[in-house]
Image (spheres, rainbow over the protein chains, first blue to last red):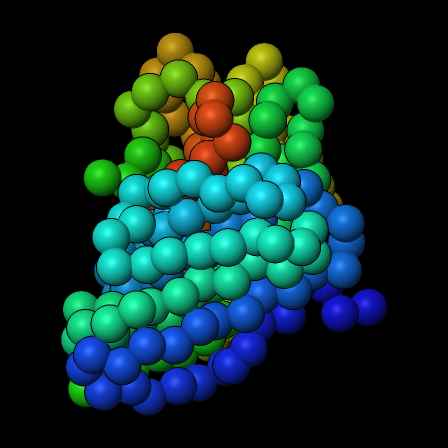
Length: 116
Length: 110
């Protein structure tokens, strides 16, 4: 009964390094999301996907890229990490609510990234 | 900019009291959702209320939605120490995006 799994849970990077966060869900959800959470800012949407092979920009997409090659996986990449990207990253997935669009989100436990 | 804004930002009450949190938003929505986050954990969905609904209950939770005022409230009755957490409202819009507010930090003292 895994739900949404994020790896890694913790990572420290140096400025300019690259890395990929992996999100996997086993609920056959169509929609997947990447959010970042900073103190006092709530959650801000980075990128999202409404299906395999499709991605879209959210509120704060700059400096990040994503891919959804398989329905169950959603990858978030940082090509050249900056200290401003120090944050906690959350992946989420949801079913499609036929009437209302976005349904209930299921979240992973988060990935804490520090960029020095 | 964030769509939803919670009020208050922090709330401290005694066990057994009721806790009320409010959420205001700016543009039209398809639905509004409330989430809970324990310290250091992911968010957990509490309740979803559609734009054509006015009130919804789930256990000790009661959510109201007033689309004319663009506001919602979450009431937790008979609070417990285990209810200590941050609570977020999130607004669902056309285009499959869910936008979160900054949250209310609730502390329930035993």
